[in-house]
Length: 104
Image 1 (cartoon, rainbow, N blue to C red):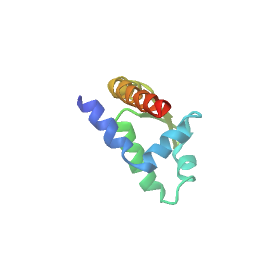
Image 2: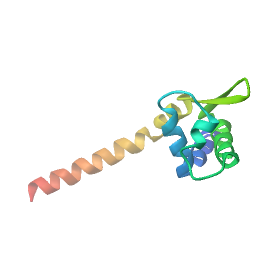
Image 3: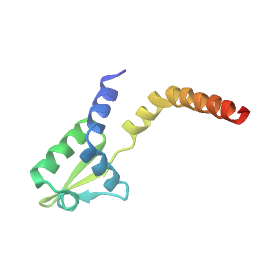
Image 4: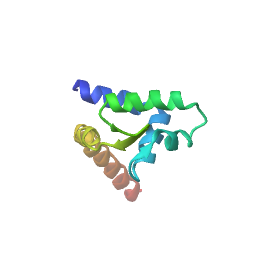
């Protein structure tokens, strides 16, 4: 597993960071907008965004005094490629279970 994949897994380990990514699915948002969805202070949200940025999951753009964050898909696509063999494994297991249950 590459360091990039390790960083992405570590970033995704936090429910708050996964929620930040979900919020960014609709498009770029300011840090203040993102922070308004959480019961934590803005500096804590900024810390989570820094971890996501370091993992390549979000990009940051400064507009005036505001920072805008945007979801970056490439690391998630790399993660999906890494997980693909495991998905095939579990699909085969589920099919085998379904076949056994249908025989019963």
